[in-house]
Length: 338
Image (cartoon, rainbow, N blue to C red; front, side, top):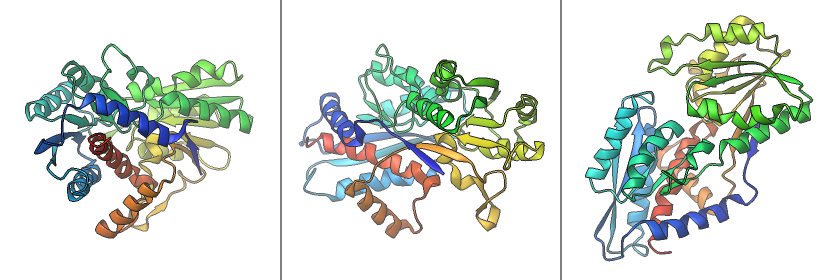
């Protein structure tokens, strides 16, 4: 089950605001012969990089839009999403040195905050496709940062509504030990008392470069000891599987329990499939997930159809990062003819 959470004004008006803002930000003209757009990526986002190049190629092929200007994609990639903040700064500066006019990424809130320190100071706009930390809306250093996802407070409000609807009076939380995990459920924790929802446990999972070696057994045992029946998991992609496997081993999955997961896990749903069988295992059955709604515009349908024709297969929930990498490129391109 997927519960879609979206702002009331919808993405159409949001895109218009972004286009108007970009028109003020990016200094270029139709006489420019080349315009460089950077992508801050990391290993594991290879399909996003393909989508980035795919979008740029489509824009360049449309001679009615920029007949004398060519967009050039510049990608920097870190070895791991958990690299030191120093690598975020290094890759951001590398893009600046390559004379990019705008940057797409990073994809994590903690990374976006660091990159924005550099880019905002240099008046270079950046679009963060998936960053959702509400504390990123800081006018002191995020003047040139644009968001494409609803902030985490909307997801927290959706979680509260689910709890109220299901009449759950107590829950346990497990989150990533970073901005996404900690700040992602701030609104939920703040309003839980008003909704008379008791938080029985609040476990944190440290980030690691090697998910194959991560040990979450103690955190899961603490969840079990809390005697909670409802678990809300707010972790990055890749972390859900070892947590759910440990939970299954501890006996806290199944018909007597409920696991509610946030967008980070839903977007990574493909990695929860069991090996060659490509089926969800017992630990995933009955899980409820939330993700933001991208609605159903004709442009999105056209993009999906063309992508599937070129690369085969379908864009499922677990590949939604692909669609989130495409719109920023089109926004940057549309700004030039707005």
